[in-house]
Image: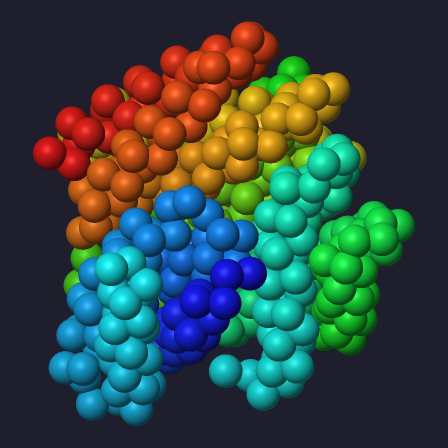
Amino acid sequence: MNANYKECIQACLSCLEACNVCYHACLKEDEKMAKCIELDRECAEICSFAVNAMQRTSIFAKQICALCAEICDACGTECKSHDHQHCQDCAEACFRCAEECRKMSA
Amino acid sequence: MNANYKECIQACLSCLEACNVCYHACLKEDEKMAKCIELDRECAEICSFAVNAMQRTSIFAKQICALCAEICDACGTECKSHDHQHCQDCAEACFRCAEECRKMSA
Amino acid sequence: MNANYKECIQACLSCLEACNVCYHACLKEDEKMAKCIELDRECAEICSFAVNAMQRTSIFAKQICALCAEICDACGTECKSHDHQHCQDCAEACFRCAEECRKMSA
Amino acid sequence: MNANYKECIQACLSCLEACNVCYHACLKEDEKMAKCIELDRECAEICSFAVNAMQRTSIFAKQICALCAEICDACGTECKSHDHQHCQDCAEACFRCAEECRKMSA
């Protein structure tokens, strides 16, 4: 695998886990967390896609990471607005992943 | 996330990377590596699926891991028969993942 | 593509659409539809997986369809219990897909 | 589902099938079809992603379709250069999908 991808893959994997954990936790919350659930899923899916693309050295890795950065920012912003620990953890992972994906796609 | 899943998720992530790397390398080999390419893709996809399912505590995580074990075994057996380092590495990751997935799905 | 797969692929595609539509509609409902949201996603993902597997004549198509049938049944049963039209439509598509997937995997 | 999406979803589904069929057929060809295999997979994956995004009315549907158009063009161009019927069929489905995805993302 392209050595340059390592840090970005790692950030995507952390974000993937945080999003999946937050998604599941949001489904269990008493209040309605529809927007967070929706974005957690979107973000987990594009992170998964980006990881796979980088690991197999896809010629579209940069474009996929650019889209990933955009979705991570949206998910991070939504999660940041909720007090649940899983949301705060997810926001942090999203913003970190967005940053790495932007570096990668530059 | 379910703490019991951690080891299995880690094995799936290692297998995912090994399969994606082997897939890409096989496409670049001079000889025809069709069966290995095909199984690397199958295995990467089910590993990705299993990781996501476990991370979001899917009620089907066990069944997905059982299928993952089966596909990992097939991919590992194919990879084991090739001398390329990427194939040998992939075989090892596949067999280890199959073992963890079988534990998980038991 | 294997001609035998055509009907099963079509049932999976209809189920995929019904699950994605129901998922989005459930997120917009006033009441909490957590279990339906969760199963709609699970079911959409395995249907997508099954369609791709059959279209590329995967050697694991039967096992993937067997798992798909199981997840479709669970999603159909959950959806059936809700009066929303999108849930009833989804239940119907799920049960039809489960039936085709069981035929395929037999 | 958004009615505007219908034509684009249909074009993505046709492209998905053509790419998966071409992928499998390329693996069976005597000659080495590595680049076609690689792009068929890339294109099938983004088409699958786009279909799901549109069906669940993702707020990122336009951006995903824009990326899909780009990958479809690349896959169509590669497939167009091969005489196999499955490659020619795939090229046609790719170019049609690229066109619909560009309309969608405009």
